[in-house]
Image (tube, rainbow, N blue to C red; front, side, top):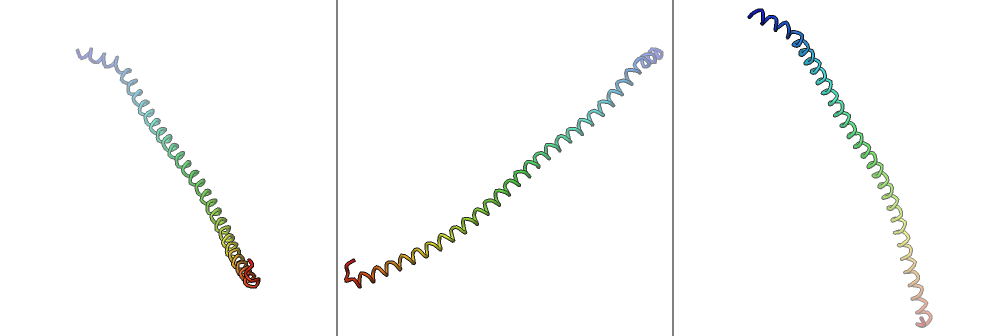
Length: 109
């Protein structure tokens, strides 16, 4: 019986050895895949970060343009207010002249 057991062990020895080698290769592959998944995950994260940074740059440019437009509108508004003040002053002056002419002319106007 001991001889049979020994011969079976000898017969199975190459199979055990190959199974052990296969398990070692499998462990290496799992480590390799795990590392690759981490790299892929990092690449995805970096891609998202890059997209967000691009969007931020676009928004900063739009903000700068909006500030410039606001400043231009303030300047234009200031010029228009100045014109209105002078037009109102000119209108009052014309009304006063008309009133004087109507008084001098004997109320003909």
